[in-house]
Image 1 (cartoon, helix red, strand yellow):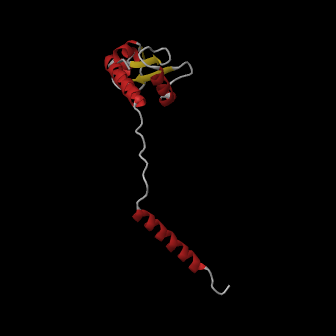
Image 2 (cartoon, helix red, strand yellow):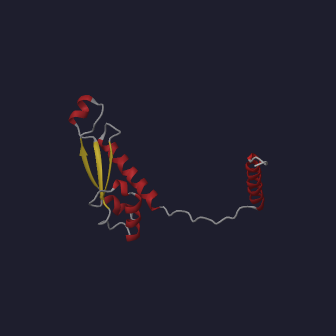
Image 3 (spheres, rainbow, N blue to C red):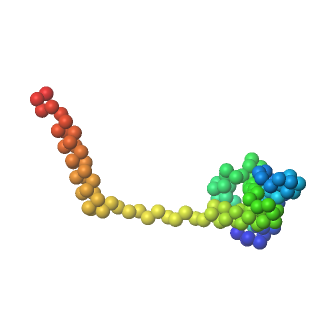
Amino acid sequence: MDEDLLLSELEYKAVRSSGPGGQHANKTATRVELSFEVESSSALTDNEKSRILRKLSGRINKEGVLKMANEDSRSQHTNKELVTQNFLFELKEALKKPKARKKTKPTKASRIKRLKAKKKKSEIKANRKDPLK
């Protein structure tokens, strides 16, 4: 993953933000929306693209465009930085390879403990039965 090339492929769009802010919010476009076309990216390998499409499928629309937005700050510049940081974080998390599971066996003590618990449970159930019937 070439981060500089990746950042050059991002498209930003500033729109009006919702929520409080009064006149400032009504007349300035502070919400920043980030768009990234995963399939046409030259910064990612095919393997990375498929992993991103699988892991971030909830954020990717039908056209294969990853969309993210931020409107936390009153500043458009700050929101742009925040959405870019969030995008890079999400991408790195999606590209992390899962750790291989190590096969383990139950210890001898745990097997004995389990069998004792089963034996006790079966004795309790056996004692419930009326011996005369």
